[in-house]
Image (cartoon, rainbow, N blue to C red; front, side, top):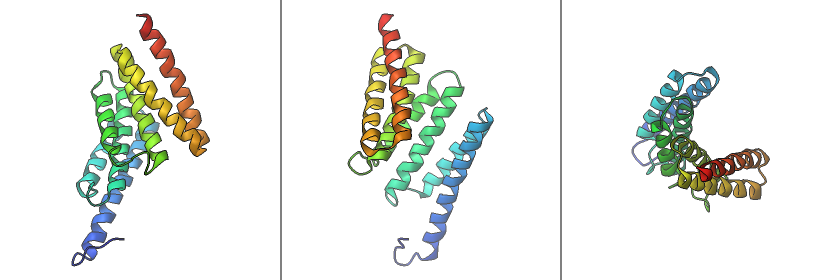
Length: 178
């Protein structure tokens, strides 16, 4: 643990607090995924936002990016359950911010998961809005995530993104006919 001089135990308490908040967010998100509804997902968002008050980009950039990714995942789940596009747009924005630190060259598999997740949210936005251009952007991102996952030898992500690519291609075909 990195402790700046003079801060001692406060830094340990602060790190423990934001890690606890992030883990609480993960627990709420998992419960929300299993239970349906939106209440637990809203609690997850509140916990992630609380964690981000101390888990800053300046202090712990990769941890910060992971929390942003978690926030994006939770917004995406809410967006799938709710009508409209606002939550999906928030997911896309959270993933974009996370990708500022989760760079392909630095953490390729994390980059792939976040990029592919953002692509999935873009695909849902394209479907709801009938937007061919957004669907094509989604396919591009999902394909890039698929390639990196395949190159990394991660079979579960490869299978997941391969299926999402098929769905995005089908969406593009449907939107192209309109």
